[in-house]
Amino acid sequence: MDMFDKILVCLDGSKLAEQILPYVVEQAKRFRSKIVLFQAYTIPATTFVSATPGTVNMAPNLIQQEEQRLKKEAVKYLEEVAESLRENGLEVECVVVEGSAGNLIVSYAQDEAVDLIALATHGHSGLSRIVFGSVADQVLRESGLPILIIKPQEIED
Image 1 (cartoon, rainbow, N blue to C red):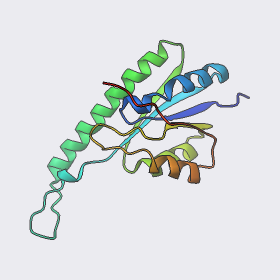
Image 2 (cartoon, rainbow, N blue to C red; image 1 turned 180 degrees about the vertical axis):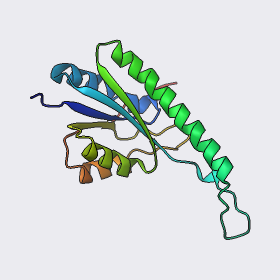
Image 3 (cartoon, one colour; image 1 turned 30 degrees about the horizontal axis):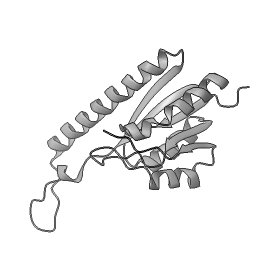
């Protein structure tokens, strides 16, 4: 049996978070692991429109449109990353889910027999939709799985 059959790689669309990829590629090649690229997204609070002071009117059509846009954007991003990994002969799957990143990472890892979780500690997306930091802490505390975690280096634009 290989040590890491399935590696869950948590990305948020940022170049900082992608700095985990060379480490994952090395592990995946060594253990012939399947890589699962994972991204969680949340619908921004600006999608919820206040009808009267103190209440929130959840414009269903607007929320649905925003959710579809965010999901499509995340799938496109992960597939682009996956393609470069596949060109290196690696088996890659992409998973995009809506909700709280920490909870979703932990539950997906446990439900899908993940052997290793890989993530960067401070890979914030440009729009701050997805937050790592507290997420990394939650995954460390709750997953009960081996974790490959890095603190990415700042990138000059």
